[in-house]
Image (cartoon, rainbow, N blue to C red; front, side, top):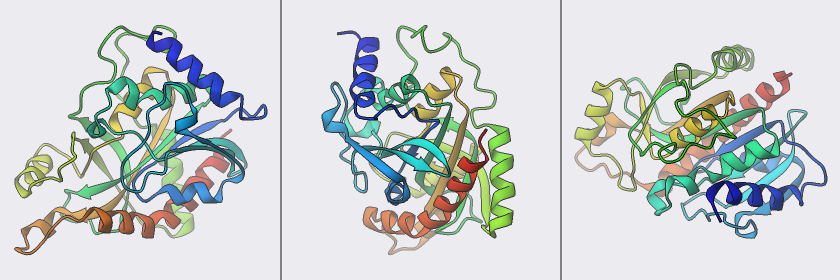
Length: 275
């Protein structure tokens, strides 16, 4: 079976569980952010393990389900846990869920992640709108082009939709939610960054660093899907200067969980604004 057949077979398997629902937006929930799925109304849960050809998420804080239901008055399909390159999956598998959501009908993609703040003004718990990214992971479009989805050389001038960013900033002001805005850099992981790497990422223009997101965004933009991205800052670069500092995965998930309520409010309002 070729890759395109895998995409359509997986989409058919998910569609058969949806009772005729067609999602308007896809949502990718990162480490510790899966609780947004808990407020989706009238949910249908489709475990990744039940989808043919689908990878299974193994990362901390990633449950491994599609949740389909209503959020902000719109039908959404949320990934309760994403797939990472560091888990040993090829990029075709890492981004398979985005292709499947495209086939299911999404018109928008919302992505979230837990990230380390390389910007020295950032604090743990900050929400950062991703305005651009630096991709240090293998590009997921390497290989034969999927002409049914998009062009060989897709434009990436505006990977994160300016109109959605503007609307999110308006909503945040109304809700009294403080936001940062910056550039996200993605590297392979799974080891956390060294202090020298934090300094390097800052020097090349990155405000936050993580191990995900950019492959999904590249594939979405290849298909012409507008993207809104948000990072929860769960640890900060200047802390690594402390002699006894250790980056703790469990602490990162807890920090993301603590910020998830604000992100949920923002995502709901943003979904309500979609036409």
